[in-house]
Length: 423
Ligand SMILES: [Zn+2]
Image (cartoon, rainbow, N blue to C red; front, side, top):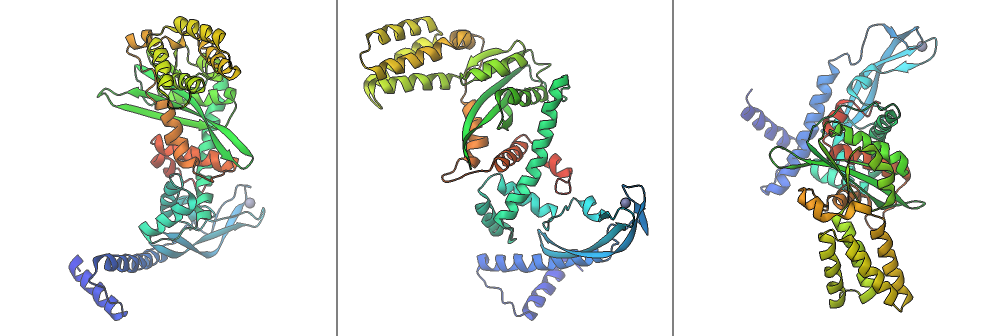
């Protein structure tokens, strides 16, 4: 039978079922999609009914050393991309240790849940991009399949946990300098580190982020990320692992960009031997703006003029002139808030040593802060985690972020090939 004949038969079948297709395309396509998916689910069921799913003979080896005996074919109803499908698969039980197993579930990566791996993959993709409730609605709109917000959250956490644990294990191996293999080998590798606050049930906590980026042979930029809620010392190991994957050990030049926070220079810089340390330009300027606004007010011409003057000195790497100017102004300041504002900028600038030598960095052709540091905070963390009224449990925030990072790092297919639901 060719496709045309089959289509005619489907039309006849639908008419027989009393379904009148509207001439309105929007309505007809929706009715047809749902009906044909229902047929697809039945086809899938029929196809699987004919197989001895997970049958490995009358008995199979048990982990305890004894043998598990085949008991029966057990039914399970699964929510698939096509609809609900009931399948029967071999159930084994060990008379000695009472352990039971369903080899088919293991093999296809089904796990304990009722969602098929195909549908779960789609559901978690929405879960890492959108709030779970919205993800559930979008999934229904796009596929006609219903998976509750709670289930999407549970699936995202389960798969995200696997990623987070793998990351932790890799970071743990830094203790013996057991580096993961390099996936790319750029000549110049940038490592940009920053932190951003996420609202968790017990208050705000810092998600530390690192972006490794480089330029490809055809001039494109590529980036990989890591995000952890961890102390600076612990986070350093995660950055090291990411940097090794991005060619830390073969790169001719390493550039570390930070927002100026001390922990970055103290904990990350020592792991990137010989790295040129740069305070991210936009973060440095942000501090200058903060001070300017406190001195001359928000949005005033004086603020802009004052900031521009400092910015020009900064652009030329003239840190000494900036400090002299700020010191003089502080001595002349009458208001305590002005003195404080100047004091805080003096401390910030004074603490950066040679990490503000923008004239030299520019002459070397280095990126002094493309905004990529902040972009990582926004694109990895902010967009998903910081919506109004959103509060996260610690497990929820780390697993969702780890899974999101896996996707952004191009590891999505590899991850699903490992059958994460059965893990
Ligand atoms: Zn046993």
